[in-house]
Image (cartoon, rainbow, N blue to C red; front, side, top):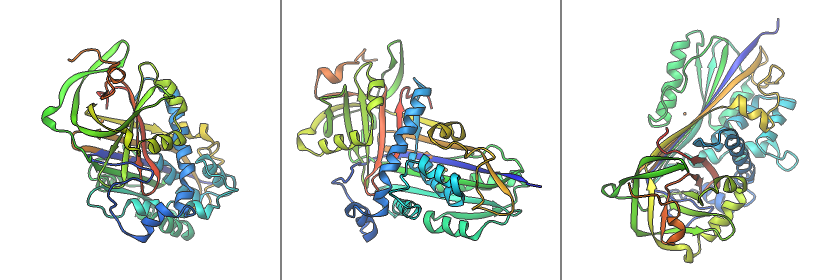
Length: 426
């Protein structure tokens, strides 16, 4: 009899901003002098840099789909967490299922070998290098059933390429296994991701948990005593009260795009990370979403390295916490993962004993922004002032929906991507 047992993928992203910096190669401090990290920035042929275009392509395809289906909602996710988890899963997929996963993630298999793709995810090791200025932690845990014999090649490859930790557990003890998984997710994300797993069933034979935690400190933190209550205009008919942070004595990198109806602010962190906050003109959010690409971010970044865009700015920016939760088995089939969540998927590279099935997969990410910076995880009355940013070139008010991109400068990867529509909704 052909028994079908279940796998479960859980992906968690936590972002915490405190003070930071993004560049696709920036001028800030570097936290590691390792030759491996330096090669990421200088060797264009390195596997780590070869996978960044596909990772960026997947990030925006995922964003476009979510934005089109949930207009008017906050969006926040970690594309790198999702890509790394599914690339690791592909180590246990065979034939068409393996091809489907990797091509769904945006990789061109005629240009990149599977080996190069997996070696490229050495970015996980780089993100985990110790840095006193920036807290970044990314990894994967595999929780394996005692009842199933897993192929040594799959286990060895997940350790080699993704530094995955393996835990053998008894899935008949669903409560004990749930506590074990939640404990590890909480531990690895500094306590920010709790109760990742709500329930398990006895058919599950393996749980893959991918997590990412980021905590950055602003290069130019806000002064808490200057934070005031102001309106944030969700749309033409809705406003909410938020705690609005204020800076009016600092210089910042920002521009008003001459070709697109938006302003772009680059907020730097201490360490190898930068955040872009993109503020569309009134009523132009959809227009900016439709043209947002990695190439556009690169153009903005190149401009924002010119001294002419470094100006004294009166900046209003909201304190907030937001989160995003996504059932990936309902989303990824529309991005090319056609049969992965069906019973026709071939996951025989994980185990030969039983046919394995991936019925569902979840991703959760949270973002918290305050005066000191940002925390994030995947294991945030002075009148109607919509147009103030256009009226005074030295004033920038994030008092309406905006986009956020958090970028790792030494790995050249988008860590988090999102949209803040209502900062009062978690």
